[in-house]
Image (cartoon, rainbow, N blue to C red):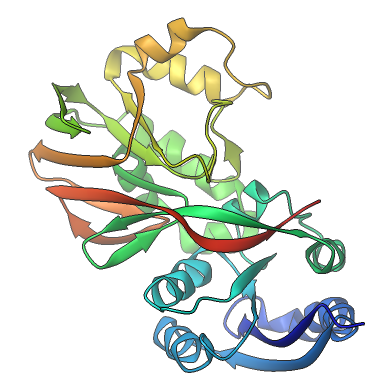
Amino acid sequence: MPRYNKALFLYNGNAGSDNIEQKLSETLPVFAQRIKELIVIQTFSIEEAQETCLNYGEQIDLLLILGGDGTLHACINTISRLEKRPVIGVLPGGTSNDFSRMMEIPQNLNQAAKTLVNGRETPVDVGKLEECYFLNFWGIGLVTETSFNIDKNQKSRLGVLSYFISALKTINQADSFSFRMTIDGKVIEDEAIMILVMNGKYLGTRQIPIDSIHASDGQLDVLVIKNSNLTLFKELMSLDQPWAETESFQELSYTKGEHIEITASPEQEVDMDGEINFKTPSSIDLLPNHLTFLHAQ
């Protein structure tokens, strides 16, 4: 018996087009068994993906996205504006696939499809900056410089390793900046080389080792990295287990909040889920339980 009456399967025609036939054969038959009406649309640009979501978003029960974090970011920036929003299932079709990892979706496509059709619907918070939305993170400083330094040719050959190679190139070039941050009325003034406002717990395939990060807890997690504790941050990012001691939080200035305002000097480029379209100052709000995603059982 079908679980959903009408679903849209949207995939990025530019991502790995050489084996798209295999990707579709691994996923579509799985969904066809559990969906009464399945619409399949290939897109070739961010604008086309957003237009497709706008045209179909309020008509469907389920939106299935086969693509990377960039495709997902484009889609949720349209879906989040709708009054009637479909359930969303994310298939790992990119380099990092950070959000699908947080939903505990297998990175093998066939296994991912089977997990999604049997997955549980779970509400997810969404971060908002002006009229744009993010699922994973808002960041300034080192994280933005890393994004700028990614070698696209290297990325196509090495995949997720390119993120870390880029980070290593950037790590000795990071410049500190002054900032003033207000979190739910509390003011913090200091210097940093990176600030992360996180809703997700993965960054470039690596899990941020803070076990209190949840995408549906009604709060954003704020992490400030200074030059003096950069080595500690690198060591903690290499761990497979969550941070166990609150000393790490204190050294790295970790806190939570729902409304965050940040100014920086000099002005900083803003990275939201890997897309760099804004500069500081930023005023960030949390939309609790704004979207619903399929999570592994």
